[in-house]
Structures are given as C-alpha cells and as structure tokens.
Amino acid sequence: MRVEHDRAEDDRLKARAAWVSIAANGVLIAFKLVVGVISGSIGIISEAVHSATDLVAAVIALVSVRQAARPADRRHLYGHEKVENLSGVIEGGIIFAAGVAIVVEAVQHLISGETLDHIPLAIAVMLVSAAVNIGLTAYLSAAARRTDSPALRADAANHLTDVYTSLSVTAGLVLIEVTGRTFFDPVLAIVVAVLIMWTAWRIVSSSTRVLLDEALPDDELAVVRATVAEHRGELIIGYHKLRARQAGAKHLIDLHITVPSDMTVAAAHQIAEHIENDIAERLPHTEVLVHIEPGSHERRDES
Image (cartoon, rainbow, N blue to C red; front, side, top):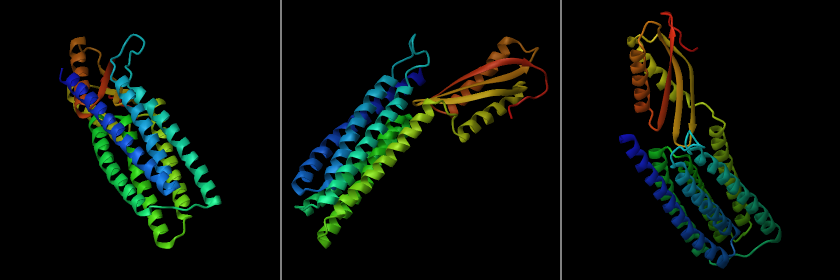
C-alpha cells in the first residue's frame, strides 16, 4: 500500500513538473520572439526556436509521464514505463532538427550581414531567460531525482542547455554593443545550435540504451550482489543469472538462487521474499523476481 501511495505521489509530481515547464516555456517563447523581431537578432530568434522545441519536449514529457503511469494490462504485462524512454528519443530528434535549422539561418545572416536595434533590451531579455532556466533546471532536476523520471531528466537537460545558450547570446550582444561588429550574433547562434544538437544526441543516446535493455549501472548491481550475500546465513548456496534493466523510472531485476535440495518449499520461498524486499528497499522504483533452484552445498555464485 505504501509503494502504491509513493508511486501515485511520484506521478503527480511528474505531471506538475511537466506543466511548470510548459508554462515557463510559453512565456519565454513570447518574450524572445517579440524582442528578436524588434532587434533583428538571429541569436535571440534562435533562442526562441530553442524554447519552442523545449515547449514541444515538455508537452511530450507530460503525455509520456501520464502514459507511463498507466497500470499493466493484458497487452502490456510489464506496464507502460518505457513510454518515457521513447519520448526521450522523440524529444532528441525534434531538438536536433531545430539545431540544424538554426545553423542554416545563421549562415544566411552571416553571409548577407545584418543590423541590430534595441540591443540593451535584447540583453535584458536574455539575462531574464537565463535566470528562469536556472530555476527550471533546478526544479526539474529535483523532480527527476525524486521520481527517477527519464522524461523529466531530459527536460532538465534541455533547460540547462538553455542557460548556456542564453548566456552565449548575451555575450554576443554585449560584444556587438561594444565593438559594433554584428557578425558576433550569427556566430553565437551557430554555437547555440551546436550545443542544442549535442544535448539532443545525449538525450537520444541515453533513451536508446534503456530501450535496448542495457544493464543497470555497476553501483546498483553491486547493491544487489551485496544484499544477496547478506543472506548467506539463510542457507543460500549461491546465485547466478543476475539480470537487470530499466523501463522508464522502474528498475527490473531477476536472479536465480540455489538452496539445499532438502530445504522445504516454504523456507526457500521465505528466503526469496526477504531478498526481494531488501533489494527493493535499497533500490527505489525496483521490482525484483527471485527464482529458486535446488543445488548441492557447494557455493556457486556468478562470475
């Protein structure tokens, strides 16, 4: 009952965080577009495009966390958690495409030349944008750690990139104001685009590894092994076939333990339950399945 309550609480937190991200991105897009058009800065317009991709990503994150929260059904016996990882691939593709579009536009501005107006206003907007994104990154990162949500983690990574890109554009605008050379604006826009595409690659790479059932990190597997080792006093001979993967915020672990062939089914089952509960307690958001096998008294652990 406690686990179900915690999961419901996590689902509400994920949805709330996604809504905050959507609202903040909507406001930032409006400000950046208006000031970008007024000033003629491709750097600010590229930032508006970046925020627009973040808005799309936030909407995808909201939809994915809601879908991932659905319980298992007859067609999805292991639940829907991998929807979050799939959303990360989609988000990454959208963000990468936006980066390419910014590079194309910036190169055109670099070739044709440009004039900028209202630079102090543009600088102020970009500084406000950086401050808002710092707050969003902290909030979304905390929510992602609390819920172990890949979708929120990807959204937080987007906003952290926004901090760097906003400060880069600000630096370019300051250089233009000081030197009068407008080529800094498209050059910084290209830098922004490269950062955007790098973030997109990291998001896609991370999500793809989970979709391909990559093993859990070594430190988490070490917790599993240490937990099993603690039960040696309960006549466990050894263990093998330890497998662990992730689906969304859920970790799925299964392993085989060997017990003396003369041990009763009830006793062996009790040991398996103890191991499952101990691992789940030490690794939150984890489902554990322990298979029992009879064996000799010779210890046999996986290598």
